Length: 200
View (tube, rainbow, N blue to C red):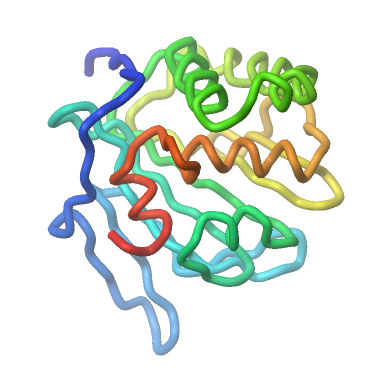
């Protein structure tokens, strides 16, 4: 599988045909997106998080990754999700190989597109920590699971296939900034945002 670049702005859409709900029990469901599996709920820091929505990050006709958002309580607006207290998780499931440096570039572009220079200056230490963490992912391979998680006690944690990468990064406001990369007014991908908001 060839490496894939991230454009700054892409034309994107969630493909309804790519979403399938598979019954796993009387009250539980699994969402399948382009072969990526999302449980309807997960446990984090002793709290149950529910799947708010799932979308697909695309570059033209190529699917890059599926992205799911887990929160304590479902909501349909960005600010209601970003400002929601408690643990959260953005769960990415890669559908193509992606170079780690290009992943960093995409993150930086998303932060700059949704925040002022003053805000970014305030979070410089955290942004640098997150950048170094993502740089440890030399290549995100097809099938890899990369999670951006937040808990009040730990801050932001990045995991790759269940293994923590880099240090814990403090600050609820910083995690909210990271969420806006996907959910902000200028999101990484409009279709992915729509899916994460549960409107896909």
